[in-house]
Image (tube, rainbow, N blue to C red; front, side, top):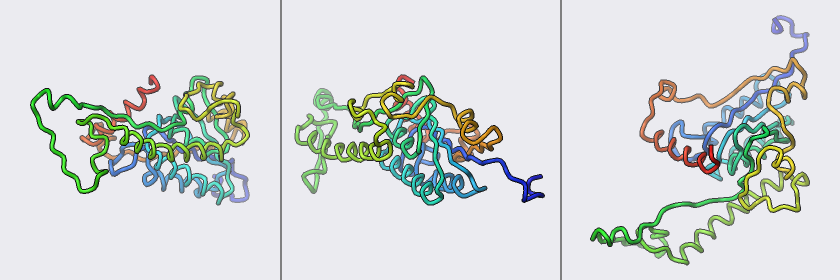
Length: 267
């Protein structure tokens, strides 16, 4: 009916983007959150229907730091361009890259049991230096370039390889810290080390300055924009085979990887 009477004031509109699951790059269709898949969803949220704000509902254990950075940067570019506030609401977790996404918002709201933080970078693997010899198997590796055989799991770990790994991890960690400091600023508790990979729960995250309060999406948006606010959910559409319950080999691998990420937080 409002379309028939354009002079009538429409209720305020807040699109809600759901950011659910592992953050992953690469070409695995439907495997986690990535900038390419989310770009049209984010664009639609900021440009369709004259929104008064955009909300993010985040439930992510993290993943790719590059994709986390790209998604957060896209949200901030559009928010600044359209001069719209962004509100983030954390469900089970906004950890590691999931928290990087949350920092794209102007304010962050959590559940009393939400897991927040894990501001660090991790590289994990396995080593089997004695396995081949035990079974009489000879390992043959030939490289052009002295650094091509790096952290070979079938060879003993070398100190110089570990040093090279830290030389790669440290700049990523620095970029993560810079993002948090730029977005949270003076709200952070300067007396604590917030960048050591620790996780805070609910009110603890608020006390640390990583979040702004306890709150859920619908009541908080109504408090900000009135009881008649229109809350419109948006998300990446699942591939047809996922909607039918079919899981391809790549998706099965991605599911196992995501399960391992969640398991780090006991979820």
